[in-house]
Image (cartoon, rainbow, N blue to C red; front, side, top):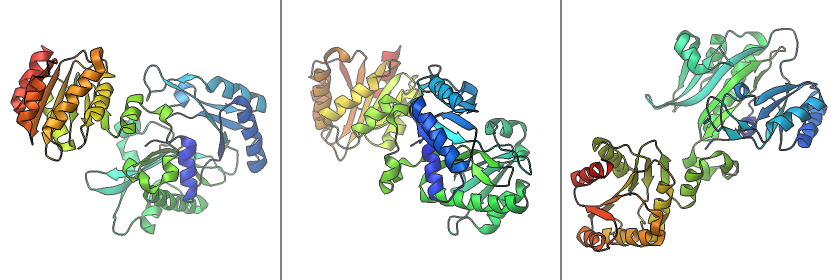
Length: 397
């Protein structure tokens, strides 16, 4: 689950990570009030107005601007709130901005020049260990840095049996070229950041930039935080941070009815019970000359209501030219699934305008095939995997 920048910073602050302070606002008037509050608390005279959407590159799309007066705070907030923000990480339509973060100006003059760094914490799937990735080139696209100057990217893997050790945090600060108070600050920052990553059950923390201020403080100026959906039951306060306005409506609808759904770019919709069978079914579709349009696991309770919900979700994708239903009847009986398909098809009337191929194997599969064949509906039944593949290929031609 993705969260907004201001929410990510709230999580970081809970674990002692230094952050750029800010207040979220949904109207220009609220933005001015937030700016006044920050001035009283921090003494900041200028303010940074940041669009809050689930996408990076907001500054490139005009979603991050500096305000040097309260009048500018109001004007910039009015310009950003309600805009369709297009960034390199959004679609061409962009995302509508519903709120902004009014943040303190942290690039103030002092004894030294401010310096930006990049730090992220994530899982290295190749080794099965958490990894800190960091670079002296903060504020830039890390992909560009990796491609053009890979020697400027460092990594530090963490042994899960002992966690992040003090010497590793010091190593990060040393490789970033810091010394004195900034060195100590970075060591503390990295230690707290890793503690936050583990404590929040996160999938990704990406802080770009991490700023060394002119007076050698180390703070997170931005925060991209992705939380592990499977661990949200341990964090009801984080679950409450979900903003469904930022999510794919189809994904939201699938989650509401308990379906495991992932949208893809193909033309054949999939309805399967079990993640392993779903993966094999997508391979089958590919071999048959099609492309899977989705991953959809209906689970072990494929009754009429659940099947109908799955149909409606799959058919929201206009690219779908056929649907393959592949069910193994172990826990659930095939005849029950077949009846669910027939009932759902009849309930939906003319909403289904694409060919449907149904393969049911397992308990009562013979009864299920007869139910499908005798239904009088435009549903093709199959018994073998290859037979289903051949029928998929035929309807796509």
